[in-house]
Image 1 (cartoon, protein in one colour):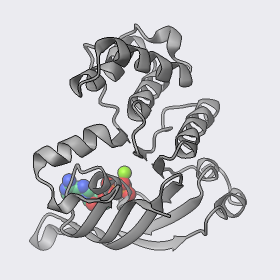
Image 2 (image 1 turned 120 degrees about the vertical axis):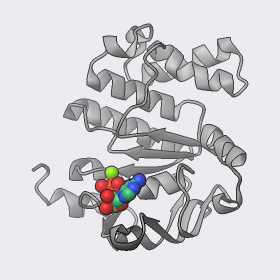
Image 3 (image 1 turned 90 degrees about the vertical axis):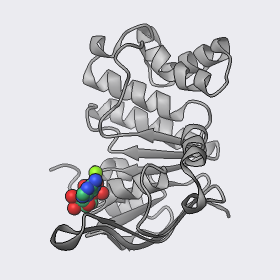
Length: 241
Ligand code: ADP
Ligand code: MG
């Protein structure tokens, strides 16, 4: 089994001196192709930092991150930008949709910038919007969409183009539970075509879709469930606060 993403003894320190924070300390984890790994932990435990170093948005203070066989720590900014555009799909807590572009254009523009023809890019955008039940709203601008609809556009943008690594940081936050489940079904389907999904969530029911659940506290992995043993264990906990 090949690891699609590997955190190898990763430490990330923010700030310096008295205000220094170890967002991650000595985190080692591998996630495989086809695997959905959920990351849970209290606020400030390092979950978002784990994603940002894997997505090449931030560099570890020490240790390495390897994505699809390539060590990000040896890459320059331009190379890193290419990995981000071509291999990694990212759903942020803040959605980062472009206001001046329609839902469809928010998805097709990055594909076009990456060299795809306009026709193919628009067709890929529409297909992916259909997967999140947003086909009829493809021509709307972000401000004409509800929070949940905007979130579905952001998710469609992350999964379009068959990216190998999908990083989702509480992607279902603004969604009702049935749409949340639909999003998880979509992420799960991406795993089944060989992608690797890392999902940060607070919701134990959503973590139940994962093959493995990793628990972070104070920047360290303190526990993890075995492959596919997560759901039964987690579903015994109260599902919501
Ligand atoms: P989580 O996503 O689990 O809530 P984060 O990864 O966002 O946690 O943050 C982990 C720790 O690192 C927190 O203490 C947070 O305040 C700190 N941190 C995160 N990003 C920065 C930053 N850019 N500058 C300074 N501290 C940061
Ligand atoms: Mg976070």
